[in-house]
Image (cartoon, rainbow, N blue to C red; front, side, top):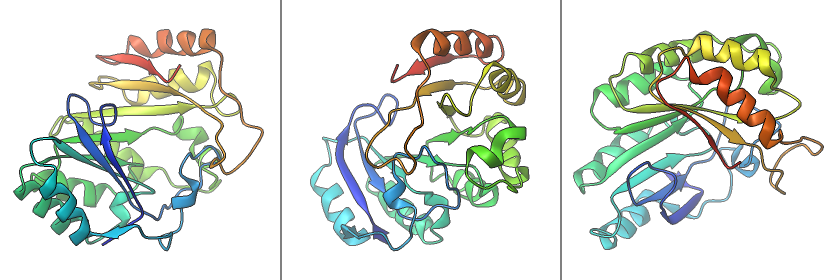
Length: 229
């Protein structure tokens, strides 16, 4: 498996765990606010293969607790299951970041006991999904299926939304809150304009706006908070 980036240690990406983060290339969405737009292509520059990752992890036993798979969209990788299985066998916990557009693969990994925590992006309310992810005709049925699966509580999870002034408003938040009602955890993340963002001109919401959005969603989920604000 081609690996396109490695953060050797993070205290933020995997709740309660000291972890490393593995970046995989390829994504089936085209979000204009994506922070990792250089990883949209499955053929992004490779930094290591899975054997080099195993070597790295064997040397980090006792220092790291977990491994985060992010992207891009990790579930586009059909060869991810055996890699996860090998890493689990080394004693590491695994977190998966996903856009939710591959519910069958998500279910397979969870039901095989290969994933300890899932972070799924909720890009916007269903009505605004297509325009938000750069695919106007996008069918949200698979994303909805992933949401429903996670709400069943078969694996610890969180939902999260990167909030962008041009795409999100109070109506968006009300509809998202209704959609994921009863969720364990939901985080509103502040947008940060970086060089890797695909489109310029996008803006973060003010802290006041973010707090207002947080108040809207709080009553619908068990735990809600702001990140990066």
